[in-house]
Length: 203
Ligand SMILES: CC(C)(COP(=O)(O)OP(=O)(O)OC[C@H]1O[C@@H](n2cnc3c(N)ncnc32)[C@H](O)[C@@H]1OP(=O)(O)O)[C@@H](O)C(=O)NCCC(=O)NCCS
Image (cartoon, rainbow, N blue to C red):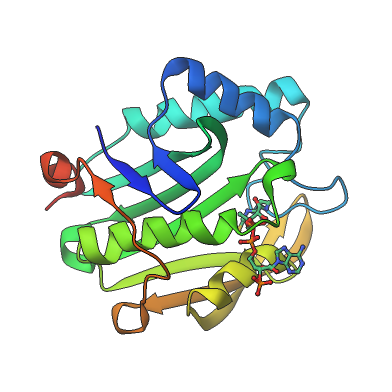
């Protein structure tokens, strides 16, 4: 899949094997502080080697399980040619539901510089303009200020909460929803290579 999205500072695309290994190293160096788990599935809780392996295995698992009616696109985010994180988007029966769900992470040293907003905006532009989605949903644990900040900046509305258990403890998950009519891309997002893979998205 030669799909590539660009933002003012970033490029989003599938990684080569070597780039995937670099991405795994970025994750193993840390994605969040030790006292705050931002994920419902706490995949960053292991040793650096375990975290790196999870990044690689999850990438290949999602590729291997891809179906046009049940897909998860994990695009690696590059800054100046170096992998810095992942922006994902998934959907089931997209041709009918026209709804996508997104997720993301950045290596800790790349956070807080506006890249999280840029990469989510790029994926939303692919969803709404490229794939003709009607809605995009997201979820952030209620104390995840950075993720909530990205959603707020991009125009999401609050969409209820879920009560989840992470590592045996109650965590409240804030659901968010962005409808097509509320979407305004904050910058131009050149999208390359989409036409050849529309059928892979069930379209
Ligand atoms: C969530 C994440 C991808 C956001 O990316 P980012 O590059 O750090 O976010 P941005 O710099 O684009 O910031 C977006 C907004 O949130 C605000 N924000 C960022 N970090 C914040 C923090 N720690 N506390 C409060 N506000 C914060 C920013 O100020 C910005 O708003 P502003 O421009 O109005 O000031 C990144 O922080 C990350 O990878 N976190 C760890 C993993 C994670 O939480 N993933 C999401 C799971 S749901």
